[in-house]
Length: 296
Image (cartoon, rainbow, N blue to C red; front, side, top):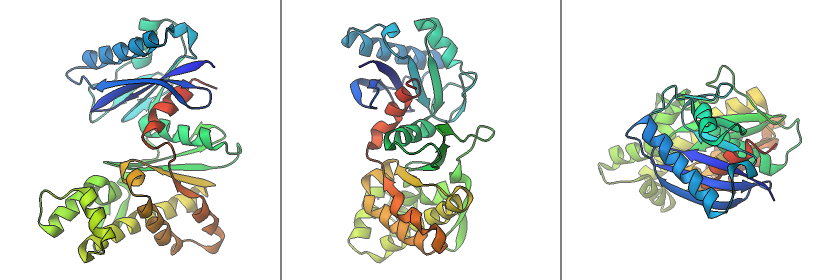
């Protein structure tokens, strides 16, 4: 079975894998991100691609091509990494550079959240007309919607639900500030007056029924539910998949979000409650989605 090269680039690590037509990882390698400069990061990517190809006795011409997922704002049409907070690729022409290195092969790039969403979408085998929603809850919060195998982009910055203001402890806070993993940890440290407290600790205390932790997790769930309600009202998705570390490690939290959402929905919208689920491919969805970008 023919494969594609999937590349997942982040601020802490770069991963490269061969992805087959079924969305399965055939071979994989990763290393810390070389973020000292734009060129050092690029050369680290090339070294990993070469390693995976050599380990499997493949030439790049034997593959479907290269798909890349990376953080921040991405110019998909022109193949340029526009803006990122955690890697040094401002206006970096990644597609042009990869073609210079590997020849005139198919190369596609996209934002990492959209790439992860695309993997989930492709592997669910939905009907073309089904609206799909993906929400990642991790150090940040973002969303992607897909229909007819097409990612909805707007002017290029769509899905940034982390900017939406939500009620949180009787104030209005940006969803990402309040309800991300970082937000949960910060609130936990403030309430417990413990600078060593982690997001995991807050969830553990919630499961143990501690009043303060229950308040934090309930406020977080209500914030997410309010934004999901907006997504449902605007786009009426068939399915919503949750990804990201907070979702992946706390599936019971997703059930709480669904309970809060149920209180907001019109009865004609409640069908979505049976179709909200946690990712089944979890942390691999980014690299799988990158490979699938070039497997039509």
